[in-house]
Image (tube, rainbow, N blue to C red; front, side, top):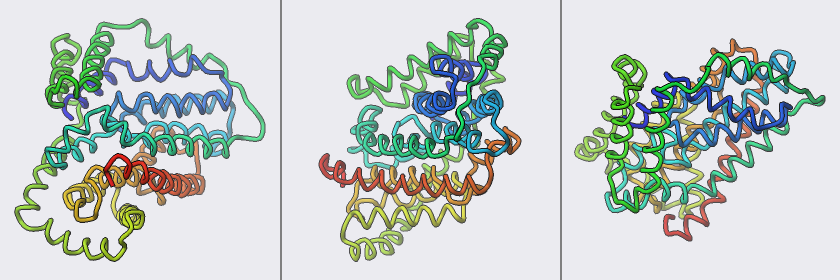
Length: 375
C-alpha cells in the first residue's frame, strides 16, 4: 500500500496523471459521446495504475469541467452531468475489480487465510472480478447514454492544447515515475510466476522512484496519504485484536443463524449488500468500508462464501451511493468544480441506478464464482 500510494503521489507531483488524462482525450472525437467514452474508459485504464480513488477523481475533475464548458453545456444540464458522472464512475466503480484499484483491496487480501492469499495475485484478482467488472462497465455506459443531451455538441481542441502546452515536454521526474510505475505493474503481473511477496514489489517500485531522484523528501512527506495508510495498518492489526477478544465469535453467532435461515448464497449476498447500503446511509465511504471488511471477511466461511467474495461484495457496495452527501468522492468533485456540473436530483438518480447495476453485477457473477470454487 505504501509503494502504491508513493508512486501515485509521484505521478501527481510530476504532472504525469494530468498528461495521461489529456492523452486519452487526444485519441477520441471531440464530441459529447466521444468525450464521455474517453472519460469512462480512460478512468478504467487509470484505475489499476493509480490506487487512490480520490487522487484519480481529483485529477480528472478539472478536465471534465473544462470539457463541459468547451461543449457549451449550461450549469447542471444533462450534458454537463453526463460528463461529470463519466469522470466519477470511470475512476471509481471498477476499483474493486483490480487488486491495485483501491487501497482497501490490500486490506481484504491481508484478512484472507494465508492459503488463499497466494491465489489472489494481481492476475488472479482480476480473473475473479472480471464478470462483475464487465457488467458494471456496460451498465455505466448505458446509464451515461441515457443522460445524453438532445442536441449534439463539438468541443474545440483549444482546451487540450492549452493544458498540454502548460505541461511542456516530459521531465526527468515524469520519466522516473514511468519507470517506477513500469516496475510496479510488471511485478504485479508476474507476481504469481516469480512467487515474490507483494510488499517487496511495492517497495522496489518506491525505491526506484526515490533512487531516481523523482520522489523527494517533501513529496514523500506531504504527497502520500499517511492518514489512510496509518488507518490501514491500525485496522489490519485490529483484525487480530477482534479475534483475540472474541468479537469474531460474537459476529459469527449473530450472522450464522441468519445465513442458515436464508440458505441460498444469492440471498446471503443480497443480505450483505443490504447491510452495506444501510451502513452507507449512516457512515461515509471510508469508515464504513473499513468497519465492514474487518468484521465480515474473517467470518465469511460461516456464511458459506469465501472471504474474497465477501470483501469484493462489500467493496462494490461502498463505491455506490444513494445519498450524495454521504459519498466523499461526489463531495470532492462538487467542490473542485464549484458545484456547477450536476444537481442533487441528478446525483440521487444516478446513485440509485448504479446501485441497482451493482446488485445485478454481483448476482450475475455468483454462478461464475461457484464454477471456480469460490461460492
